[in-house]
Image 1 (cartoon, rainbow, N blue to C red):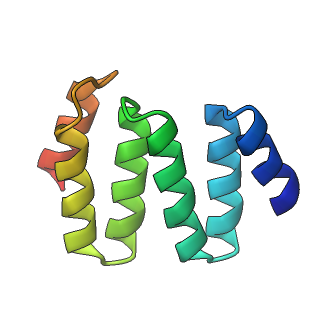
Image 2: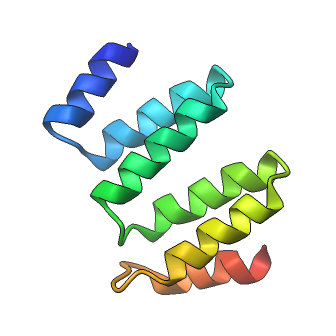
Length: 94
């Protein structure tokens, strides 16, 4: 499954593919791979506020508060965001 999803991301990255791959790795408790996937996801789609929020939420659940804060800070520094209100609300609630 990893190879198939990895190939799909490499050839034709899509939000749904990233989300399914991250979900699978979270279920397998592979945090390092999830982080790498989120990094690739956000490199591909830096304006995606939902992805930024989910990445920060994952780090918060892992009690990685400083990491989550750094993700929010990096997210709000992006020149263009698709739903900034979603991101700001998540950051304020953090």
